Length: 99
Image (tube, rainbow, N blue to C red; front, side, top):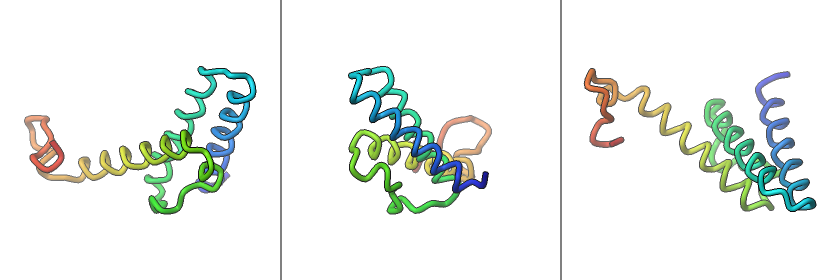
């Protein structure tokens, strides 16, 4: 499958886990759903998906939406730091902007 299909499958899996967790009251499964949404957000950032293009399956689920946004933001920040000359100096510390 293409990259877009992988995102859809990750979002579908996160939503499935969330729904089953709600039915069974399974906190561990809910945590797994949130981690899956977080990973989907990271992947979306890598694929240059806009922060405003929230996956439809997450729009009505605040826990998944929040996890997706956190993953997206963290990945974009990591990518920004990876390309920052100040963060790439030999001392290993982030620059003043990213620190």
